[in-house]
Length: 338
Length: 235
Image (spheres, each protein chain N blue to C red):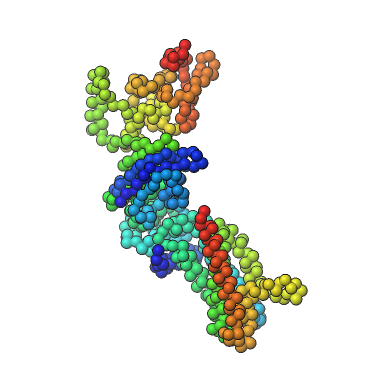
């Protein structure tokens, strides 16, 4: 069972919410779409059929086989967990076992408690149980692990694994790359520029060492024409690879190198000097002792006094990066100014 | 989409549990019964008082409870979940109406019993009461679709309670203000007139016009509900 977006495109009042993209989500796979809140809400409205795509279409098996996990969902608060689940069990005439599901979301000790007496995380788990009862083919999850406690996050990940095993299609809509990396197999980023696939690699310590070993060898033979050009960052247990042009700027604070990408920051294991060397061919520039900036993204150079300057970037946050006096001369040289 | 009694039953059970634990709303069903008991003990035995408590039961249970049940689903954001489920709107409203219907009949029965109202012909009065219950439930559904929260529903239901409970007294002023003659067509006054006729020994045929007018009210209120539902559910 799969969910397919075919040349899906949405515009509102002549401004593009997202341009046309193709995406196929196969069964047994968890896919995450990382986007802004606006795009996320638009996507949900479209899948619900409350709003229409400007172009293209979305294909899925059967409307009744979609289950939605909304960020803001009301639960019947005066019912106990057991009664609540039983109600939806009857409503969907489901064949799932309520006990099994309660155990899966670990609410069996609280099943006689009223929903209004549960904590936020437990309510979210009750909500999860309720969409599991539906025994749908495709699950659409909006920010599944937002504001959850650690215990519940662990349970959610277990449930995602269970869904994978049952060969269900799962689409996670989130604005946090961290969530996406933790739960999903395939991550795409959707914004007004289009769809980009974010590459991830599972971290296997041994392989990592090997890789490092290979890389240092490669560095010894400096004339190697092909080099690995992605910049790895670490999010939880995974390594996320970024294309250099995606990076807005790189900062070093307290010995930690941090990549800034679309308003989010990711720690990186390389030092600024290593990165400067690697990124020089991509038009990156060491503008300050603790900053490297992507020159393609620079919009303005602001002169505060004769000795202090700033670069304003063209990114989402319009971030500004300091430019030191000595580097100003280099920059002018690069720009062809005297 | 097939109409399934299992789903209606599920909704009925859920709403019953929900309702019985919501003391703010469920306490209201005792009001007509207590009032009827007090009047009964005071020995007031006029048809007008009997029908005041019965009409109060209609307005407070049939209309107010139905209105709250619907408005609460909207307020708590649970309606979306129900709408996405296999249950159709008809089944959702059906389950709720069934609960309100049973409650109304029970409350009306106890009010009549405690105020010692014994109609001359049980069959005709019972039939008229069931018809009226349908009207008040339709009214409750209509208001429930309009109201956005339980708070709002308890405000908009006030004029309904006012007009339909106290309505029997309006007829006293028709001599002075002829315009109030229109009020004689209200379903509660029709019900009262029907009861009066029954006490004088009227059969089904004699009260046909009263039943007919109540029937027209039911058709009107259900048509209005459908129109409002179509409008509301578009956005």
